[in-house]
Image 1 (cartoon, rainbow, N blue to C red):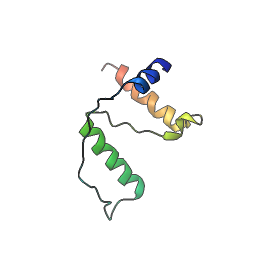
Image 2 (cartoon, helix red, strand yellow; image 1 turned 90 degrees about the vertical axis):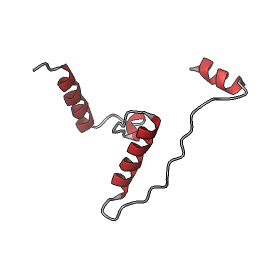
Image 3 (cartoon, rainbow, N blue to C red; image 1 turned 60 degrees about the vertical axis):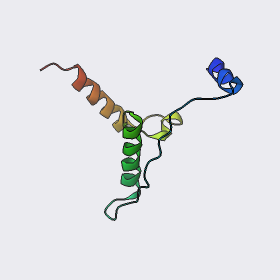
Image 4 (tube, rainbow, N blue to C red; image 1 turned 135 degrees about the vertical axis):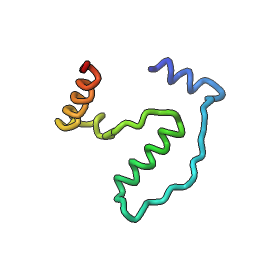
Length: 82
């Protein structure tokens, strides 16, 4: 990781793709969390990324039991062969 940071800081340019998305407004029937998730989905689609459900607190605290269980269920579905 240190090597990567030094390479970035010592290079004269960092090449990346930039997409300018149209403005998005909050719908009357959605709350702030739903709006944020909708915008996150639009950003992921524009960048060709996977839209993951992400809790930014995971890096500071222990994961919630329901998030662990949700991931376990997801992986068990991937492994099951019917």
